[in-house]
Length: 286
Image 1 (tube, rainbow, N blue to C red):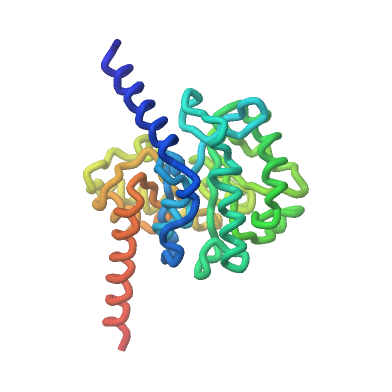
Image 2 (cartoon, rainbow, N blue to C red):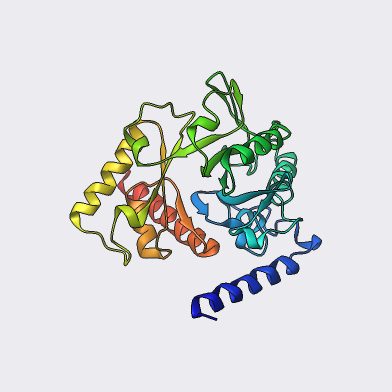
């Protein structure tokens, strides 16, 4: 067996072990008073021992779940080999989110208006979305929906990514999701209610991974942020380094979502950064 194959099967073993370790007693957040951390995005959130709940405990307002359509069920996993019948999009995400809104008067956090659920479609896009739309319709009471181009805000905004394309949703008179755009969306006139976020592969756009960028790269980053914001879109990078020096680059550039697999570390970093910013503003105020 090759070394890469060994690594894959070891990862599979530990992932399956974590699924077994997750029990009914783990289905409640431990920190119900978590302060919302608006720019924190839980990349591949389902790989944590307590999907969604660990993110909620750390105040995250954005989480990502990958789904495969298997026998008409939307199963959450990074690879098809990892799907388990009990790990559905509804059981891990939609039901707990609905329960959360019942606790907090229609919100996920008492002090934050928006919560983003990213759903990455990893199986056939049209077949998967046909099932997904029916599922989302059952949660219309908690979801942001769009009726004839008019946004009706809900506690949870669903963003489709992965194999999802604009063609899946753009002709719906009533829809329960939007999609993320690619590089072309920075210059596109497609409305922000259809494409509210642009997601870019960091490694395709930049070379910096140590916490430093060239002056040209900093200018390019600033330009991408500017273009996204001019069109009313947010910006997220994926395939990114996951350490403080890099997070600071994104924070300083006003990138809207910061990807991480290190939930607690990013929360602490953003909370400290926010405290420094508030202290700085108070000093500057006459």
